[in-house]
Length: 143
Image 1 (cartoon, rainbow, N blue to C red):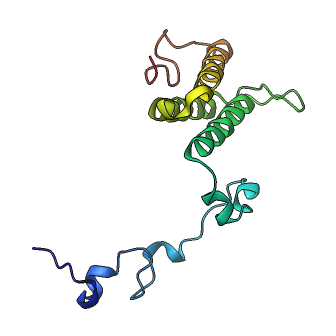
Image 2: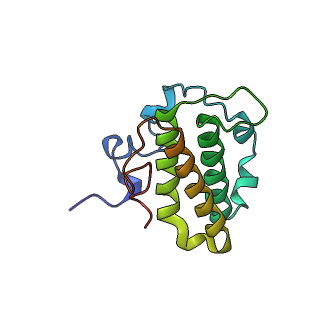
């Protein structure tokens, strides 16, 4: 039977628990790579605590949509950049996010799904050798 009294827990049992006061967490010393989302890092944590889950999911979906569009060369303000491998990953991630959370998005779900469909069509159009129908990025995740 596992030990359940936290006042007498030994170091081995608490050393892997984030926030444990006995030792630092193993990942504390690992530097995170630059990710380009400094504006997100600048948001104070208390403000994020006030944001609904639906808003976080929507914001994440919009970020994935924007990044996908950029990778598909759909940037109206700059030099078009086409990277289908990156676009495939981003579109698939977007489809996975929407598949997992569509029921929580309410009226926001339909426009996000329409955006995904547009990106999938743009991907197919940009491909020299288009995927078979149903085999494109994320097409198997949402039916």
